Image (cartoon, rainbow, N blue to C red; front, side):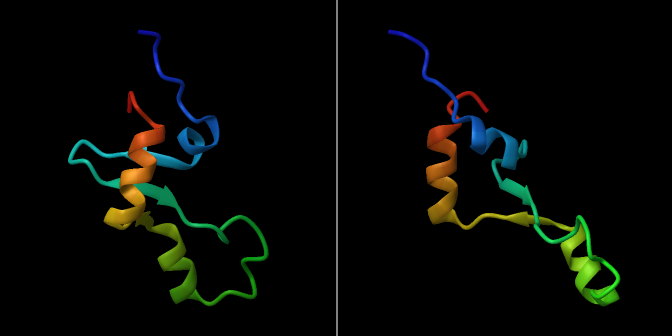
Amino acid sequence: MPKMKTHSATKKRFHITPTGKVVYKKCGHAHKLSCKNAKRLRTLKQLGVLTTATKAHVKKVLPYA
């Protein structure tokens, strides 16, 4: 049986934690930061966690993560 291929775009965007959660970096924290308020920037710094429905799909396309 050949090895399964990992989806390249998914491995760049998502990371699986040791406890099994799928986390990602939120968008909107790269440029044009002066027009965003402090609360918004604070929440954009935090990692996002996927819901269980989407988590199953991401774990399927990342077989060795």
